[in-house]
Image (cartoon, rainbow, N blue to C red):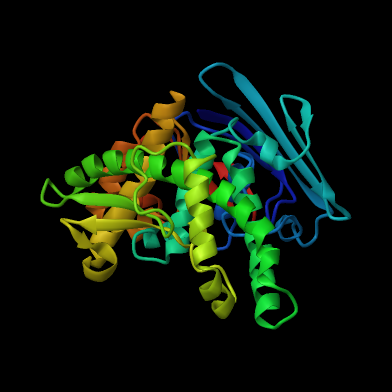
Length: 372
């Protein structure tokens, strides 16, 4: 996967941005708040994903702009493709997205066309942060391999909200627990499916991450990543999510119904699961050092890129947002060595961190980009 040519206008503070990318390394250098991360955010949106900053479309439009427009050409293993995305301030619900000149119903229609892996400073919290961070990482990784997965997780969250509202109504006497039956059946079907896909991805992640972590620790430490389900005691070898697993999921929800009503929310389910990371058998959340957490987070993101390459036979584009300044020399060298052969976009304030690598250097200042 190679990004070739990128145009942006009116996206946050970007204006007249016209970049011809290097096929390997691209360094976006500038002081803070000049627009470096905005460029990576715009590229990320072109992959069909939501803003990694959690921003809505109206927040992406520059304060003095009527809207924003993005245009990106990229080359995969088969051909060159073209993505455009445009939003008007007065027509936020009618975003215009095209792929190779064909209009798409929504931005999510871009899933699977452009594959990127992004690494931000927040990702350094991957192994020691909340379970929600790791669930989001796992769901994003799975959705890159199976484009229909995102729709299922979105629907699960909507149904979960409905069930939680019903639990509150039951607790206050405004409803009875029979009203939960319809929500439980739907949650069980979707939850079983999500559990299987997450578990299978976690097995791939464990295999890849273990090898990489052994290398970064010079063979002194062993990283293990296990999927911890709050519903199933065992998922290995189980694939019948439509019947066997869905029935078990539904049974667990019904058995926990009284506890859920008292709590006012659903205590068990894929929304409470976790990816548990251990080093040499010791749970990282309790025992790991800051350096070990950073190494584990780095390895998990590298593994995401490696698995995506293996599954699609086409290396993704790597977006590194101000990560190099957060890593020591050995970890910077490790990551650059391991993504060799992939196209990389790096934002940084200090070009000396990466200047000795061959590629293109772009200066970013007040939303404008110049090539050196």
